[in-house]
Amino acid sequence: MSEEKRPRARRIATPSSAVRHGQIAPTSRRRSLLGVIGGGLAVVLIAVASIAGIAFWDIARSANAGIALANDQKIPDIGAIEGGVNFLLVGSDSREGTDPGVFDEDPGSTLNDVNIVLHISADHTNATIISIPRDLVVRYPECPDVDGDGYGGGGWTGPINASLNEGGLPCVVLTVEELTGLSIPFAAMIQFNGVIEMANAVGGVEVCVAEPIEDEYTQTFLDAGMHTLSGLQALQFLRTRHGVGDGSDLGRISNQQVFLSSLVRKLKSAQTLTNPVALFGLAKAAISNMTLSNSLNSMDTMVSIAMALKDIPLENVVFIQYPGTTGGEGVYAGKVQPDQAAADAIFAAILADQPVGLSGGTGNGSVADPEAEAKAAAAAEAAAKEAAKAAKASPTPSTSSSASSSAAAQPAEAATPAPTVAVLPDTVNGQTANDYTCSAGRTLDQQ
Image 1 (cartoon, rainbow, N blue to C red):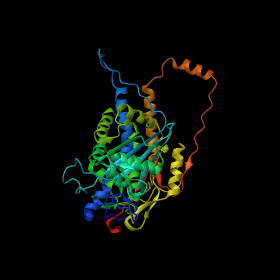
Image 2 (image 1 turned 45 degrees about the vertical axis):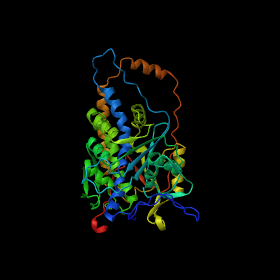
Image 3 (image 1 turned 30 degrees about the horizontal axis):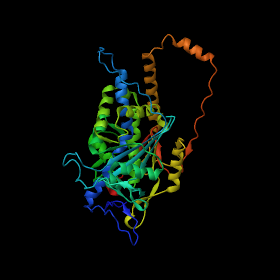
Image 4 (image 1 turned 135 degrees about the vertical axis):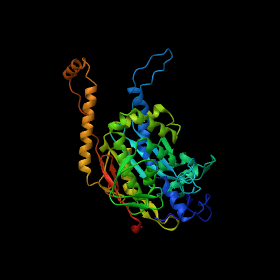
C-alpha cells in the first residue's frame, strides 16, 4: 500500500465544482511513512479507558477506614451505565508535546490514523471492538471545520484519517457514525506520549512473536519468542507496519490485536485489579493523556462505563477488523476499499444488540499461538485460585443461610434465554480477548 502522499478528503469533482480542500503537501518518503504509521496507539485505550474508571472506584471501595470528619464527603455509589454504549477511540499522529529527537519529524498534519469503535451490549454481557483502517475510503458528512464553519457533504470522499484534520474530533465522530450507522455519544483521543505512559503504568504487556519483526521505519526489532513490552518499545510495536504480515495497514491491525488481547487479559487479572497502586497509576496516565468529549469528561461517567465492562468474560470481548481490501484507482490507488456486504452484517448485528461470532481468520499480521491451550489452562487455574482466595477472605454473613433458604422456598424465575450469536462472514478477521495469538513477523529481506 503506497504511503508516498497523505491526501485530505476530496470532493468528487464535477465540471462546475472545485475541490475546496487541497491535498496535504507531499513530504519525503521517510517522513511520510513514519508519520502515517504513528497513529496506531489508541488501540491500547480500548482496555485502559474502561479500567481508568474502575481504578478510582476500586481504590475507594477497598481503602481502609479513616477518621470521620464533620465535612466528609461520601464517595458516590455509582453503578454500571444503563443500556448499551458506543464509544469511539481515536489515535492522532500529532507530535504535540513530544521531545525532539525521540520521534521522527512532525509530518505537519493532524490525522486520525487509528479509529476504534467499542460497543457494549445493553445487557453488559458482551463487547464488540471494531478497528477501522486509516486508509478506508469513506463518504464525508457535513462537518464543522477547525475554524467552526461547515463545509458541504454529500459528495466528499477520501481516506477516513483525514477527518480529524478537517474538523477535529467532532468530525471524526460524524464520519464514523455515517460509515457505521451507529450513534456515538462518547469519544476520546490520544497521542504518542499517552500510550507510552499507559504501557508503563500497566507494567508492560507480554506479546508472542512467531517470526522475527524487523522494521527500520519504527526501529522495531524483535526476535521470535515472548517479549514484555513497555514504554517506547510498546509504542514501536503498535506502530510497526512493514515488520508484520504483508506490510499493509490491515496486517498492522491484526498485529495490534495480539497486543490488545494480551493487555485485556492482564488488566482483568488479579495482579492488576487487586493492586491499588497499579490501578491508580493507570488511571492517572489515562486521564492525563486523553482528550475527552464533554459527554465523557466526568469521573462518574467513566466509572459507570467501566462498571459495564468489568465483568464481561474474555471470550465475549471480540476484536474485529473493518472488512476491506487494498485496491482502488487514481488518487485512491492503494487505499482500502470497504467490503460493504460484510460490513453491513457487522453493524446489523450491533444495531440489533446481538453478540457476534467469528468464522474467519485473525488477519495476516497474526497467527494462532501454538501454546495457546497450555496458556489458557494456566490462566484458568490462576483465576480459580484467586477466586478461592477471595471467597476465603470474605466469609458469608450469618444471615445468608436463612436468606438463602427463604429464597429457595420461592418459585424459581424463568431464566432469560441467551441472545442469538450473529456469526459474521469469513471475510471478517479478528479474535477474542481469550484467543492467544502471535505476531506474524516480517524481516527486512521480505520487504
